[in-house]
Length: 132
Length: 148
Image (cartoon, rainbow over all chains, first blue to last red; front, side, top):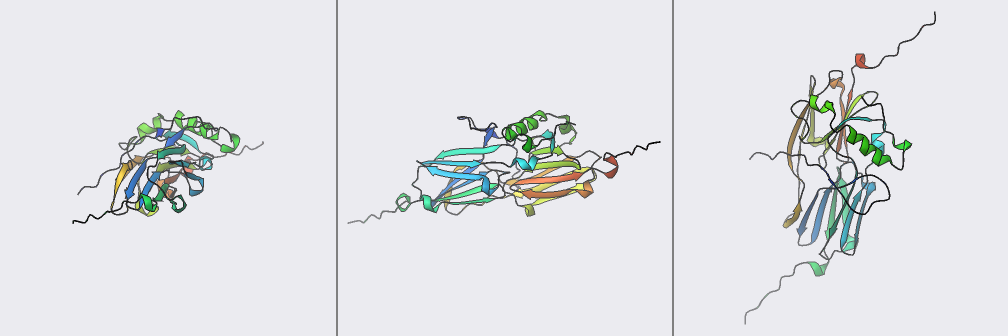
């Protein structure tokens, strides 16, 4: 089977209330996956290290934020660009009941991985039907 | 070659916006047309910079570990290739799927003043940085002025 080839997509800018600091913010590409026990989320945030990521779940809204390090560009003169550099922001409404104390977050190679375990109440229950 | 060198210390408040403006200014620069057939639009997207030593190329490769990247140089051509795999836990389903998995290979024709045999590459937080020093003879030379 031939392998799929990766393609380039330009970053989508976030338009919302203005942040206090000037500068464009972009939406990270995200995959969301659900199993019986948890909701999983992966967000591509290249250039962001773990200490610069903020994850917040409140009132059913999950907010992901990542800041890029400007020091990486010190003493460099741009001569040609194909991609924009900026901070990342994305929000999702989470409908499942999530056990917020058990949320696990991990960053590897610029990808944020979130495991949002569901509360017992939110897990699907099989109800057995007896025949009389 | 632009004379402005970006420095975040000079402008802590507007630092990010200044960087974004600088990057935007060279978006359509002619450097791109000399890259060869794998120009803009081929994965991974690349930004090119210059510093005192030579060129610095940056490519966004989130989710790809250094050991899954292969970089080859041959004459004036630099080829970056690799593979991104996306693994998911079992017995679930996707609500949203925006990230791609797959292979890539991008070849670039670089200016002859660079010494590709001394290229160095490192990968951090999903960004691949390739440093390409200029050949010795292409570097600016100081000429001493003798007082007579």
